[in-house]
Image (cartoon, rainbow, N blue to C red; front, side, top):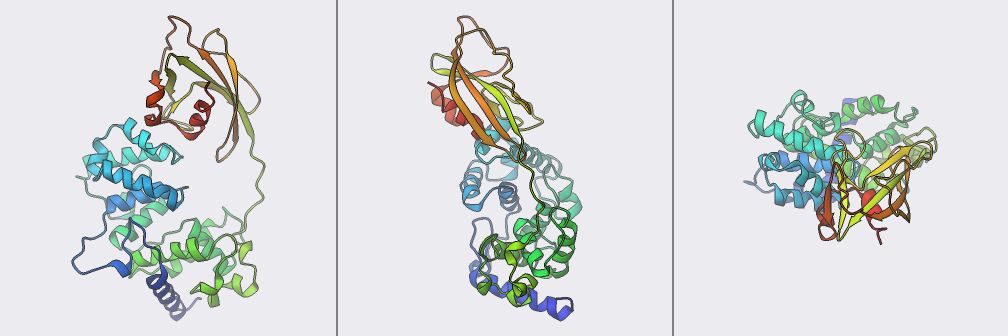
Length: 350
């Protein structure tokens, strides 16, 4: 897999496989679907899909992608939207900093780039929320420019092909070097989609379908029969448990919500007011002295810790008004920008 002839063969075998069996996804045009005179790929739609697909599966992200395009069909339309509306539509996709950066990026492109997506790596990397992977993915898929796209699926393919002995994440620079070595600069768009498809549909984490893989005869892990061993991962430490209290305050048919700070976990999202979230158990102070009734415990797993919230509910005292936040009617809760953990809290209301 080191000579120019070897690399050419790998590229061609992968592209032939992709032409025959690759997935058709709404944000990309598969070679089987291309016709003369069709419009070129839309960088806005591709960028939107790449941001949504970070830490999210294709089936989960697809309806969000369709809804965003229906609401905001251009990057200028997204830039002109209220951020609260964007956050509200994003609810359920998780990793909410992505939504804040999505809106900020749209504004930069609309106001500083005349609504035209940059087509160079340095320019893309300068935009909010766009890192190395996303920039290369846009270069390849939207502009067919030379790029090496390395996501989790590609990392798995590369570590198996070369039996990379370095544990993740320390192996990432080595993986990027090996991936760039075989990336096809002449057909960057199809090659990037093809290698990601290979990881997603054939070179899967468990029970890879090696007999259907166009690269199996060149794969060192397949030759040794230890494909599922890769990528090597360091043993994970148990996730710490953080605890807190969520104060579910009701007034008639409304619930008190407030907005979390922009920075930090769930930044900019709405929440049932809570406190604690410390490494050691703590309840904190209630918003007011009242008849706080226990409603149960909500458990939610974040990337780096597990959260356990003790949910307490009370009717607002006559004349009491919070210093911040809003009263949201029960009928309007579905439209609030509430993260999943807070919807779990509200589900425990009486």
